[in-house]
Image (cartoon, rainbow, N blue to C red):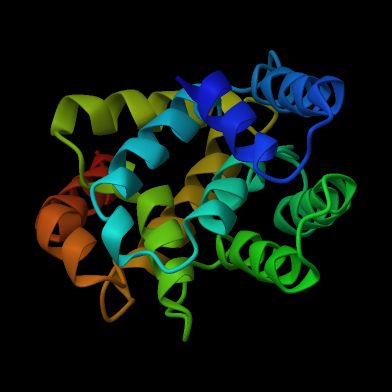
Length: 206
């Protein structure tokens, strides 16, 4: 599904099939890196599935899709510049297919917004960041699997360092006025997300 979605998307802007295939190969290769356990193509597929449910509410669907595909293309657990690096690569790749400059800029800004997941004046960005966090509001079993996958991605850090950083990230979400910025995602995942986060924080005290 992902392969076809991406190739059909690029096809709308470039007739260079080899370029399109190479761009997809790069995306697939990056998201399949051995150190990734959560930030994989499965994450992309889950985001697109969630976003399709609100496609009629998204103003620029193509740019939103490109933002999904590129938002974690650069991902290193030890880096604090992943979003910026991913945005830069997205800008370069989208320019190669002749994508409009204003849409390239929007895509980059959407990707940058996945760093802090704060409320944006752009509704498409809010849908993107909400989809990125949808895992927080899934059932307890899926959430547990997610926490285990995230821990695997951060194996370079000992438990005391990981726990400290993880607790800070979780508390950041709880301190938000609303974890999800759109009515749809807040209604669908808001209550469960808060419960999952509180339960995870509680588990660190045991």
